[in-house]
Every structure is written in C-alpha cells, then in structure tokens.
Length: 214
Image (cartoon, rainbow, N blue to C red; front, side):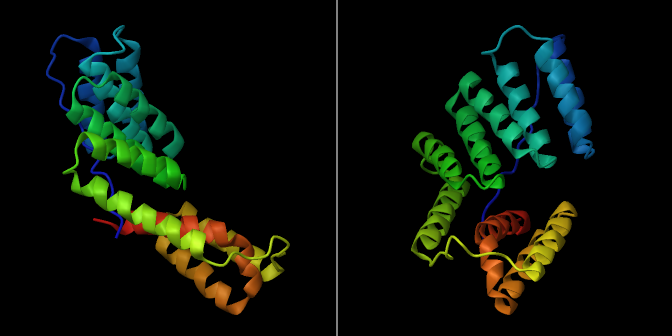
C-alpha cells in the first residue's frame, strides 16, 4: 500500500520573531484540525519576514504546504513544498520537502512529477524508507498503465457510464475514494463504455490507496 507523508510540523524556537510567532499559532491550529486557519497563519508569518532563505521561511512554507495538503489543494501544496526545498538550509529539511512535494504531486495524479520528487529525496537520503516505498509503488503503477490495453480513442460513454461517473465524483467530494473506485470498477464490468473513463479510474485508484494508507 502507498505510504503517505507524515506531514511533519516543525517547531519554531525563535521567540520574538514575528514570523515564528505566526508559525506557532499555525501549528496550534493545525493540531486542532483547523487547516484553513493554520494556512492563513503561516501566510501571515511569511508576510512578516524579509528573509526568503532562512530556516523560519523554509519551515513556514513546509507547514503551509501541509495545511494546504490537508485541504486537498495539492497543486498549491506542492508549490509551497518546492519553495521549502529552495529555502532549506539542511539536507534533512530538503528531504522532507521533496518527499512532501512528491506526495502532493501524487494527489493531483502527476505521477511522473511525484516520481521525480521522491527520486530527489532518495538521492539525498537513500535510507528514506517511505520515499523508496512510494517511488517503487508509482513505478509499478506507471508500468502497469503502459503495458495495459487502452480503450479505443473513439469510445463514447453511455448515459449509464456518465451517471456512474457523476455518482463517483459526488462520493469523491465526500472523501469516499475507495467506494468511488469500487463503483467505477464494478460499473466497467456492467458496461464496457465506462472504459472511456479509464484515466479517471486509474487516478482514483491511486488516491484511494493513498487515503487508506496508515
């Protein structure tokens, strides 16, 4: 099963620093599950500091990415993690940011980008077990897709297939990823034109695996 990022929250120890103060506020909100409010606090912290290369800036970007990831804003989360990579002052911080960026990329279905991020994490830390697991998992997923038979380009989904996809999308909105994936898979057995949504089903399977991982 796909091992997801633990989304580590960094501790800020620079008392008297306004950016770090906002960071501590954001951490407290994050721990309470108030992710939108935490993201706002991290942004306030970023706006309060001038140094875009320091430890506090990198930590705020990392934590902003974590809060955005929790809200399923994966593209924005990856951008924040990428900024954390550029600002990181240690290999440990860079590994964390690359790993988180890879997880965010996987959330958007950008498997090649996720693979690239995990590879960078492994180049810096070959012992990182979660990064290696995720890297190998995505490699297998991509290989399976490339070797599998693809539906003809002119497959037209039936009314049944369209209704099924809408139902699956409604389930996704409620974060019922595994159930939505099962619905589409079973639907494919009933109606071959559901294959018109094969890419959607593939991405849904990936997200379901991530969501179910411990």
